[in-house]
Amino acid sequence: MDTIVSLRDIRKVYHLGGEDIAAVDGVSTDIIRGDFVAIMGASGSGKSTLLNILGCLDQPTGGSYILNGEDVARLDGNMLARVRNRRIGFVFQNFSLLPRTSAIENVELPLYYGPHLRNAERRERASRLLKRVGLGERLHHTPGQLSGGQMQRVAIARALVNNPSILLADEPTGNLDSRSGAEIMTLFHQLSEEGITLIMVTHSDEIAQQAKRVVHMRDGRLI
Amino acid sequence: MNLLLLLRVALRALWRAKVRSLLTSLGIIVGIAAVIAVMGLGNGATVMIKDQMNSLGNNLVIIFPGSLNTGGVRGGTGTQQSLMDGDATALGKECEHVLSVCPIVTTSGQTMYGANNWWSPISGVTPNFLEMRRWSMAEGDFFTEADMRSGSHVCVLGATVAQNLFDSDSAMPENTYIRIRNIPFRVLGILAKKGTAAWGQDQDNIVLAPLTACRRVLQRNPFDNVNQIYLSLDSMANLESTKREIASVIRDRHHLSSDADDDFQIMDMTEVTKMVSSVSNLMTVLLTVIASISLLVGGIGIMNIMLVSVTERTREIGLRMAIGARQRDILRQFLVEAMMLSGIGGLLGVGVGVAAAHVLADINHWPILVSPLTIFVALGFSGAMGVFFGFYPAWRASRLNPIDALRYE
Image (cartoon, rainbow over all chains, first blue to last red; front, side, top):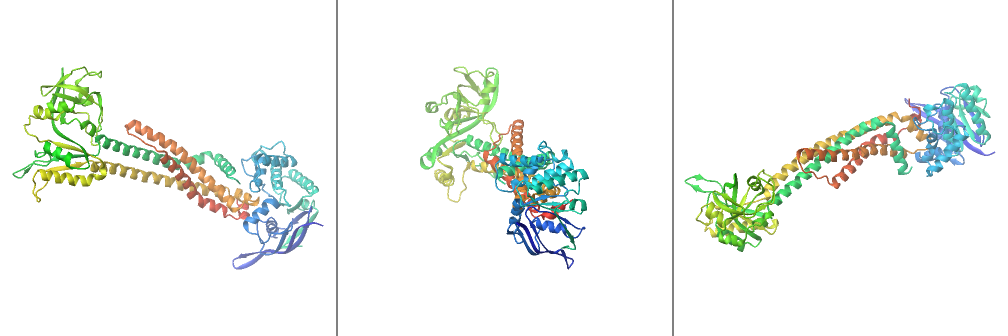
């Protein structure tokens, strides 16, 4: 099997008031290409910290993280930004779209920070992805003119625009009604079928059960 | 991101908050406009002063007789009758940097033509006077050496005198005679208009006649003394040495012993020029300082608004970082925004400033001179202000931690 994420003894320790608190306390796991993993756990279990480390937003205090064959645990800020741009797609609970900015421009955003593309090329890629998530008719709507489910689909299109190795989703259905949530999960299934590796954090059993694999976290460890 | 893209993104961000952007730029607009207007007026004043000094004549030095001292009563400059025709001739011959010499006798009197009459100063001069004063004729000709020698009763009128004696503006009739102190003088021509001198004297209120005629029939002076001698130098660089030379020549001719005071005074225009232009320079500097303070305040306004904007857009910054923006991308984005705020402010300020300078100039009849250099410097300065005052907010933005920024409420 083709391993895309390999974590070995990942630790994240915070110093709070002279005390060391391990938010992530020795996590080791492998995720293969095309997997769809749900991470579950209560608040404070360390799942968000783990997701931040997976997303190269945060660096572990110890352990190794091999993403797509590259050790990313020791990269500097600029290199991490590059990895986030090329290898990782993020989907957030609150969508995090730029307000008063059209859907297509929101989707184009990551392309500004990558290799230079011509305007037409950027447009073309962004509109292709918006069509893929079913928003081909709403390219020029701003977030204010879209429903929650539609906004999250714009965010997914944005996450995919640079053909990332993994797609990370932090409570992607947390702010959505159940019908929109179901739509998003359907879309995730489609993407998973197409071979995209998905890692999702959630605390809803119902949502988690739709993943191929569910892992639980408690006190910074996988159980 | 390339520059064009950065500019577009920044422009869009500013456009989203139009009113705020405009109000923020207002400080810069006012500051730059004030600087442009003040410098324009200052430069205009300097040019005007230079023009007026030039209109006085070619590198002119003027010699007056000294003051008369009778029994302790001192009469003031020019009361002594110590300067002679011969002095003028000698100066022309002996001073190496003196190009031409014009002895002058002065008086004043009532001129009459038909039913009109007008009071005016009258100067008896030699024919080279016109050239020395860089003056020209509006009509007719100046008198000649021949008029000088024969003491002809001819004269040339300043524009003010002509205007007051001849009602109409039409051409002067041939063979016009006016009476000066009841003595008929034939009018040869009218001088070109020269305007008001820097100290407020109307230079066009003058009648010029040959020195000889003026002295004999108007001054009724049997002697050879003159009231002034105009000297024109080849270059102002030789002013000091020539002044010493003049003094020694005249002292020699007047047989003054080495411990006696000069019985003449030498005056040149450099001091007047210096004084007038130092006043105008001082005003320009003061006003520029005030304008600069308003620019500074404008810059602080930009810094303030950029800090607010960074705080407001913390989540946007976090998102941009999450999708691959490096610190320097964020820094650049906010720096370009700040530069654009101040740059656009600068452009509008130049427009407003040039307009204001023209309006002020029109209302007050002041000359203005807004040089391209001023505009260029003002624009460069406003851009630099954007960088200076935009750097701190942009730096703060770039140092945000992406995780905290994303979670910022």
